[in-house]
Amino acid sequence: MAAQKEMKFNLGEIITRSPRLETVIMVEKFIKDNSAEFKKTELFNSLPKKIMWGTFNVILKYLYDFNRIGIDKEGHIIYIWNPELAKKFINKKRY
Image (cartoon, rainbow, N blue to C red):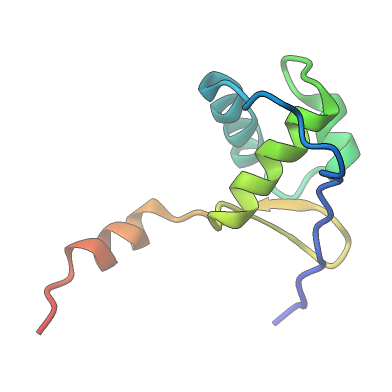
């Protein structure tokens, strides 16, 4: 199994407002559609709508913390969320 690279979020000065839900969804969908194609800066520059760098880092941290994205050893951002697998665990009977 390939080692996962540590992702840095540059949240030294956290922005004072939270990203809008539509912005989080836009970034997540773009990552899902382009999984493993872009590194962090390339991804930021390729988004369909421009957002602030600080907002982008807050969104990436959220997606990373909730296991929706990962980063490979070369630094490419990968979409790793699997809703079908999550449903199996949620619906599994516990004895």
